[in-house]
Length: 110
Image 1 (spheres, rainbow, N blue to C red):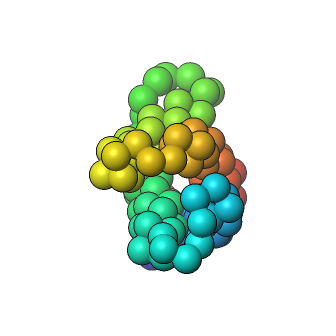
Image 2 (image 1 turned 60 degrees about the vertical axis):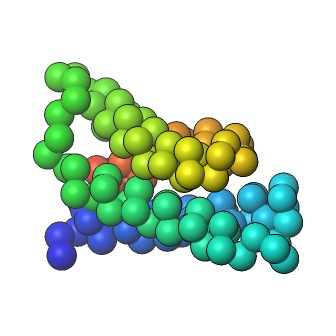
């Protein structure tokens, strides 16, 4: 496994913990255990996708990391937003931010 991929997955798992906390505080922890796990897993998948996309060029500029992180974050976080019937909008916007963070960290430290 290459370094970028490992960093992406680990960052997704780490940021997924914050998603569990945030979503749990907003909608509860008791009856939503599967949804909370799905939210965490979605962030791990986001890290996997971003980790694998190291050579992907979306724009030809120094801002490629930000655009790529935003676009891939949007694609992955939209999947859980659609399947949860738009249940939690703050987690959708957090997913956009997490895409940027994961891509920046993976690019910076790999």
